[in-house]
Length: 441
Image (cartoon, rainbow, N blue to C red; front, side, top):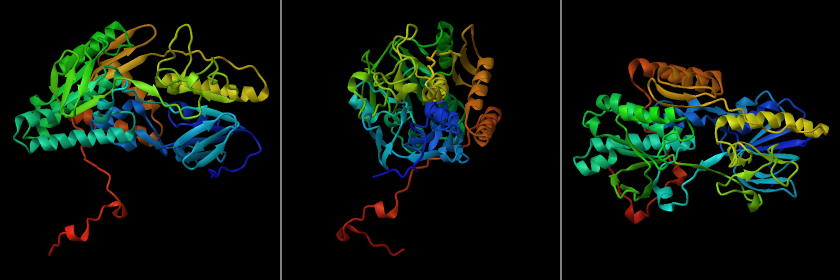
């Protein structure tokens, strides 16, 4: 089955993934001589750094998503296909997808990363991930539903279980989720849930390495921990999670925490597709590439962003899986592909570290720049500006800005809706006739 891509006299570039790397590359080459085919399982680009705000009712999903077709509506030579990637065949130069086979001249794998549970099937089955908008929205529904259930029961043990959130992983996602939940506990619970003593809402961060924001400076580690403790978040440093049965978290110290919500923010791994030689995939499921982001041993196949691992003297285990690496690799590849067509030498990738930042709540953030670090209100303001300007779409930026200003002035997020998808009537199960109930209403 064909994916119905129009024939083209020039070269076709197929890009797998519409994240920071894939979208940047497609936009840079949208007006080039290449025919661009962008394949993504969602029909939108999602802004990953703000997933946690959707999960904690700070933003609506539509504010951090932008339709991919809308991005390229004025580019007739860019074709989008919403599809699952099934496999690639380097010899035949084809990609097999859920909507058909797509032939390519150049292939770029930019499929990003997913949650890494480090082989713990028990936790994977019961924990909440935070790597997509659907996951973020599902977590929001779950947290709000737990508050509703806690309001309606008088069993103190069960209520405490419902009111406890354990976050595994003290990286940016972990501390940002914890900070947002702590502010919800302080400002929202007392107003909305009169039956709940907000002081009994327990938020804990468990970090096995012993350092929060481990990739940042020592000052930022300390500041992040101080900020969380000032928000009355319990921090378990140097402690791992051994198991989770859905009702209780067991720590490596033997301590048990009654908990109905375990948020897993402890690691990421690549998402390689079938067909890529296994010897090119490392232990974190990232694809080995050379200094030009070309998949090793291949001529016209590339990998960029979180899925790629490029070993250098400065980064022996590959570059950090952050947006700036993905964007910079995409920008360079957008210049190198036309060079390949012209037979010109390619330029190697050199990462320019522009800094790292994380926010822990209102007026609380840490920023590490190449030359210095700072924290507090000004760091928080810089964090807001940088993220706001990185959002795709003027309307989305305006929506986010209005929500942030409203929340800052009134200490209130007005997005606390429990929205679960409804089943289409034809998918509903109809009970046997002898089990149907009759009604006179």
